[in-house]
Length: 184
View 1 (cartoon, rainbow, N blue to C red):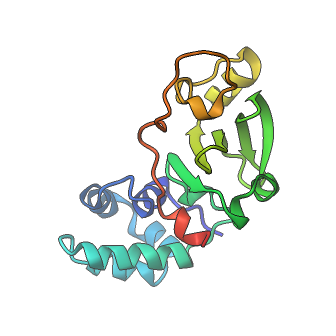
View 2 (view 1 turned 90 degrees about the horizontal axis):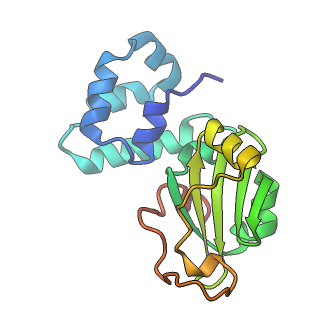
């Protein structure tokens, strides 16, 4: 299996704008791209840069055809997942191991397949998961120093009722993203 460049996954997840991807694409080594993308290479190059529908079709084809061992490459940096049969705590536990818990609803998880780290909030009030991708250095700071990101500090739904003044509004910037379509 070829290593898929991060720029391709970011473009598929819609975190890298089409224009930025095309600029990167024209600078990347053609031989590498052909070996990674296969027949999709021509589709990516020929898709009209102003035709969002054509580019969306190419992205969907890549989601279906690019080799990946887990869903992590398709999860946006701040991924929201609804809770249903395929995303129950037991199902999440099959793909991710708990590295450290901050409280019963906040955890540092690591993908059992690729080793990617995620700071995860489990919102049992509004039935959702919030996955935030974290670097290995950040995961180390959480594990060794109990130094957690502040992403969920003000989100009432993932804290015990301790009288603190927190918001019922979910944290900003989380998207359903392309991974949601794979879990239906």
